[in-house]
Image (cartoon, rainbow, N blue to C red; front, side):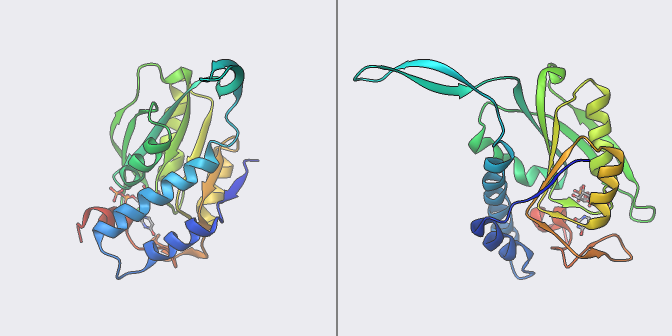
Length: 209
Ligand code: PRP
Ligand code: URA
């Protein structure tokens, strides 16, 4: 069974509350989402393997550490996942970015795929799939299935808010994928929105409502 990591760092929780606030406008919402993504990326990358290297300081030679192992890729689920990309790239500037376009059909709540472009060396990368909202889990599960189908085995999911329903679905479909979230909310409403949530993440990021 995959692990659910709730990032309860005070800075993350403080900023998440501002993100939830309905009076926060798009400019601040965008900045806050990126700031939380940066802080969460610090935790998501905590288990990256290190290798020992020699380094010459201005004083003498010593040993240091660099990140070893596979290269990292970040995959935002369009649209709302785009809001977290810059924050993560500030911490991991060499990460390549793939895109998976999915929207949730408002009637069936099923994910509909409309775009996909991933780095050509995808099978060699450790991936972090990002989307602020894990609601029914349909979109994240579909995106991760796509990534697995092209040969990637090392995948983590990072979101801002998760509903228990989405966590349960993800753990059923992808029990090998750990979930990182800033909060686990109460439930979904009849329209598939997270309660209490933050509303429609894509619309709030891009000012489309
Ligand atoms: C939102 C959100 C997730 C999805 C979550 O995207 O960003 O991708 O819903 O819901 P699920 O867990 O029930 O699949 P939306 O479909 O609104 O598209 P958008 O990002 O383009 O606004
Ligand atoms: N997508 C959103 O943007 N918000 C929700 O609460 C659920 C799905």
